[in-house]
Image (cartoon, rainbow, N blue to C red; front, side, top):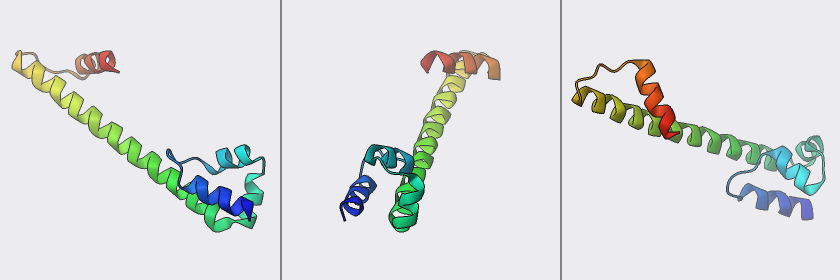
Length: 94
């Protein structure tokens, strides 16, 4: 019963952990958790994946906004934006 409680708590952690991270912390094997608590293991994995996808989408949107601002600034200065130029500008901000 303790393992079920530990897995349920892991499901609510922020940021969402991976199943292997949870298993390592608890000192148990990933395969055993999937065998004994398949639904919770899958829920932990799904939540982690969802969080990763959302994070990647947020980073992409921020980069899109930043590139747009760089290109707009270059156009306002009368420069022709070239991929290499705005990549250098972008690299300075990362």
